[in-house]
Image 1 (cartoon, rainbow, N blue to C red):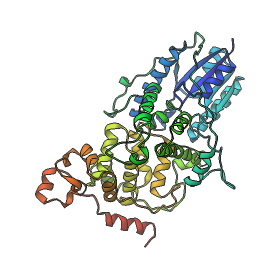
Image 2 (cartoon, rainbow, N blue to C red):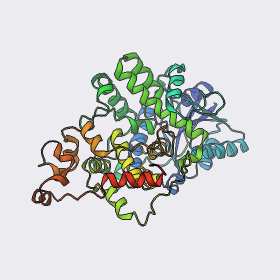
Image 3 (tube, one colour):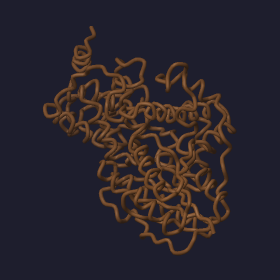
Image 4 (cartoon, helix red, strand yellow):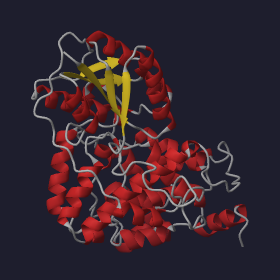
Length: 457
């Protein structure tokens, strides 16, 4: 009997899973394997919210495999060591996995290829599993990647996608391959109270409901903070519980302005992956060096703490930061707004904000998180690096009646109308009764400091 190993990483699903289908075609039996990698924790990426969501994903994946006659084998330890050990135990001659783009994922793949090769086991890394279009599949003349989104989108939108693969009917797994018990959400402490349920089953149900009820209006409503018209699929995409290829196909079949806007957002995800694949250092270093002299972290410590806690005195910023802490998630428009406030109004290094997001976001993705932060900070791919998002303008445009602010900043609940966005203008007696802080900084002063630091008039 021939055996192949399928190493699951950021692709925790059975639908549209090219590595699994390839393994089933080439071997009589497969070992579906997930390795709890201590390197993830050592690198600081093992945040409680993602650990709990991952536990849901693994349990759901195991249940789906068992319905098909299989099971998920979970091991713990260095990935290359554990995969090689499993291959030796079951006599596998090949390992299939999804190709990654981060420096960590690439190093993991190199180590795997080296260790498996020593034992005569072939490694097959499959493209377009984590993204809809593989990084490097479309490139501009004279460069290895697109540095600007719009021309990338034009090419990406014309690129033919492979057809989504159905989930296999049966997954035969050989006996005798040992594994450890599945982790559970209940084993994780320090999670956000509003954390959603993880797993492919929950993700597919959410996407199907949203296709029916949310996609058509997405083009008009995706920036409405209180209306919350986004799909909230980002955690499922991060863990690969949903296939971006399938999402693009299903949205395009529906058609309409909402589908076009949604597909464009999926393209942004692929855009960032192809940038980081070409420039791995962009996860920790400026993509475009602007010689910023960020405020000293120690001197800015009080402002950073207030930003993290949602006590900046700007209600729309504070609402977003409190949503992040409660749900482990934040509306995309709000992410842009709070990132602009930290990097350009408070003039704090984007890496500090990106780290805080990774500590809490259930969809905390090195690729999209770091490059979105750089885009806002003006050190990334934004063609207008000096743009500053005014929180008052943003609040009145995307939360006009203040419903989003009142939801997350309850002490401002009694304030009526648009006055909720500028509580410092209320009579002193009313301000004191609210117990809400004054603004950390005048917006005009923050803008002036930013322009001076960037050397602009």
